Length: 100
Image (cartoon, rainbow, N blue to C red):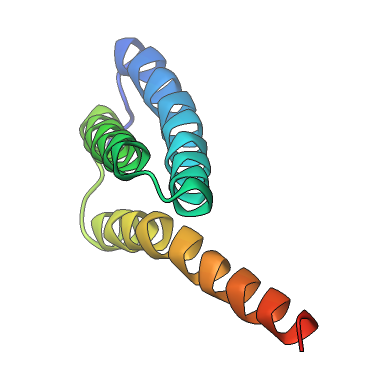
């Protein structure tokens, strides 16, 4: 594995921060959209996810990730996409059981 150029470390750090912030924005907007039933918020959540995917691509290029690391990146993106949906379903089922 070749070392990463010092100039690319800043890009990797900024893109990693963007991954965290945009992942949180996606999950928060997704939940808010479901709570309010607002299609515009759902579109904003998808825009946040698109930004997240761009940040992940930037991170991958910045660190010159190859092979198994790229597979891990794809799995991370899939996790970010499906985790809020799974948590939402869990909450709906949990709280519908409380209503009984």
